[in-house]
Every structure is written in structure tokens, then in C-alpha cells.
Image 1 (tube, rainbow, N blue to C red):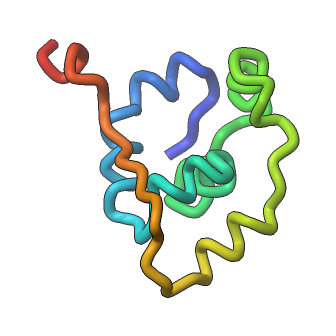
Image 2 (image 1 turned 135 degrees about the horizontal axis):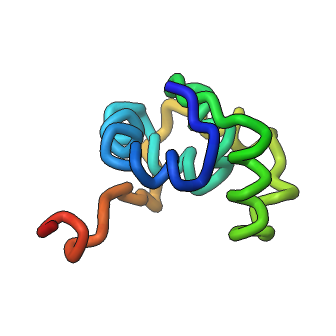
Length: 93
């Protein structure tokens, strides 16, 4: 799957969330480094889309690959677990 804009990311949210859910520690990995996880689950985010995402969320522009790689290699049970899901109000639509 290729994402060329922020709007395309939103339009494909459901299938992306399904891929994240199937990935071990997927939601945690997303929280650590969303772009690396998206690439790992087969979602190619174009430079234009990355630029739009970073404009809306500038705090994710300087994320390190090191914690992502460590979590991805880990077989230990995680003490904190995130769940990636659509907001309830959107599921009803």
C-alpha cells in the first residue's frame, strides 16, 4: 500500500490499523516510531505524505530508530501496552 497524502492515510486507516493489530507489539512500535512501523507493515509513505504528517505532528520529526529496533527484537512481555483502534464515534459511522 502506498500513501501519498495525509488524506490517503486517513482513508486507509482501517486497513492500516488491522495490520498494526496483527503485528507483535504493533501499537507500541507505532508509538515509538510510526514511520518505521508503517514501512514494516508494508505501508509506503511518500515524502509528500510524510511532510503533511510532520506538519500536523512536528513532535515526531526527531524520533530515534534505536528504541524501535530494541522493542522489535524484544521477546519480553511489555509492561505498557497500547491498543490501536478507531475512536468509537467513527466506528458507528
